[in-house]
Amino acid sequence: MYGLLILNLTAGSISRLAGRFRKVQVSEDAIKGMDSFLELPTEGHTREDIGQWVRSKGHSPRPSGEGFISRKGTVSVLAGTVLRLGLILFLASFALSTHFRITEELKIPEGGEGTILGGDIQLMSITPSLPDEYFQVGDSSSLNIESITATAVLDGERITLSSGYPKHYQGIYLDINHLGYFQQVSYKGNAFGIPLDILPPGRTHTEMLDDSLTAVSFTLAPGRTVTKGILKGMTYDLASPSYLVKIRTDQEDSQPLLIQPGQSVQNQKGAFTLGKNTFYIGILAAKDPALPGIWAGAVLMMAGGVLMFLRIFWYEKRFMYLFTDDRVLIGYEEEHFRKWGNFRFQNWADELLDVQAPPGDDDNEGDPGDAS
Image 1 (cartoon, rainbow, N blue to C red):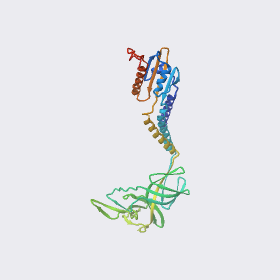
Image 2 (spheres, rainbow, N blue to C red):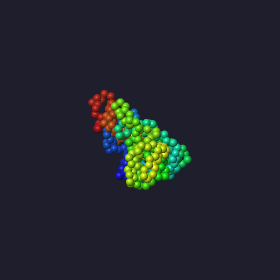
Image 3 (cartoon, helix red, strand yellow):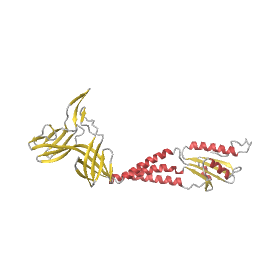
Image 4 (cartoon, rainbow, N blue to C red):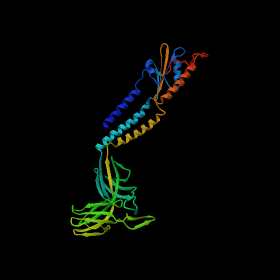
């Protein structure tokens, strides 16, 4: 469907450009086919007089075919052409993007290292706009993490990442799309880290441990119950979080236990100990060779839209006239506001007739010939 639409827009643009810039040959049929035309006897009219009258209306006639022609605003067709070109470029680039766009996501803790789209990255620091204590009413959370800033080293170069505005680096766009706690855990003698997806409060993260028969669930533990006016809710310590931990095995399902980093709980398979916790972020990386075309197409569409608006004041106006053995034919038309153009030409024609009428010849006044 994209291909047919692009082909149709391209053919339409070429047809309009060819029609607008095609050389027009002045002829009697061409003049009579215009929106307004005036037919006068040649007696009392010369080419110089008519040419001077046309020039007085802001036109510059030149020879064409059997007579003369003047065209103004011919390049106004470029407004629609720019708009269609932008749409063609946008659609073509978007179609290419769906086939050649590469994305990869990496969860990385503060101080951690990893690889994303072939580049080595080390996360130096994370600065989230997170309150130390959060007050929540009810079960649903309205916590809004407005911004996250991180400093990293990618392929040896120090860069700053932020949420909401992708960072462009060597053809790759990097954006922060997630924030959570990275909790160090020790279980049955094995130490590892778990990226806990438990923000905002109320979410539960479940992680399988060293085997598929043991799972542990984490939920942020509320602190104090606080009443503020008619509102009653719980506070959460986001700077030093505590967790409600539930360990499930094939033989037992423990009750939720309140545990903080540095503490441990014991089950029949061994000790479950929490170590140090830090923040982690999710980095979304995208490599899209068609993205410059998408941006260029969007810019062209906006420019074309502005130019289309300006066509209210900028559009094609065309004068034609020719002399035969016994007649003078003058034609005029405008691309837009055709009725206004016809009215304007009739006023001009009345002016021409008033100037050319013999003094005192009132009987012929108002009989200029065949005007339509």
